[in-house]
Image (cartoon, rainbow, N blue to C red):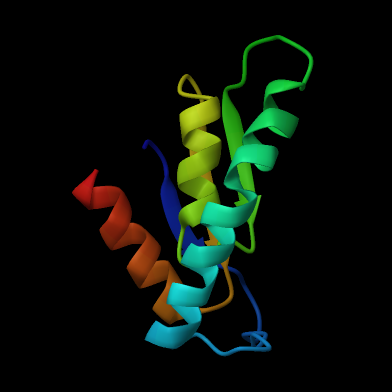
Length: 96
């Protein structure tokens, strides 16, 4: 996956389920459940070059990775208000 993750400017918004390890696992489950239909939806985007794709509210990075898999030519950037999730998403990106 290309790109980076960063925190959004301003005060951090809180997640309804927090940004703990348990909350991150919840987001992983959601990514597995909704991933196939989300990929199909993104593949229906009209053709053309994608230089940059932004994942606003990237959480722990599962959706960011999915967007990068659908648009491999794009720089994919995940942005989130949770510093803990940004650290996790950045580490996952480095591991790929």
